[in-house]
Amino acid sequence: MKVSRQAAVLLLSAGLLLSGCSSSSDNPGDEGDPGPTLPARTVAKDKWQEGPAEPKLHKPYPYDIHTHCGVKWVKFGGRWWVLDAVFPGVEQVEGEPPSQDSQRLAGYMTLIGPDTANFDAAGMPTMQFVPAEDEPPGCA
Image (cartoon, rainbow, N blue to C red; front, side):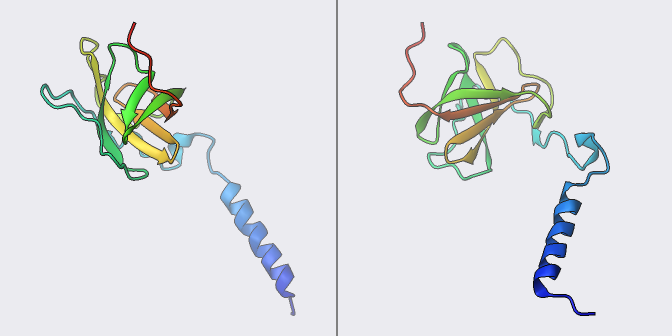
């Protein structure tokens, strides 16, 4: 049986497309989602965690957010970022939620793309930041 090269490529592509779209379950937790993958952090009394000057993509860095004026603005990787979105759902950090008595929130900042960074902490939804056009206003 002779099959043209174009027909073989078309059939192979269709098979790969269909197998990539199939799912044995509609529940995301059933598809190998490992759940939280990072340990909860606590604020170190005399050490402020702010990540490196040049963070690498997809590497979570210990990071503390100063919460006195809110969590809208952060400085990470040498530039200011502003909160863009909050994604409730699967937690990335296991452990107990942080104390509400502190003015720092200990978690992890991960550079997702050149203009996207995610902050994750135990018991908190993922907070997504984008580069700020201006420096933040002073705390009122």
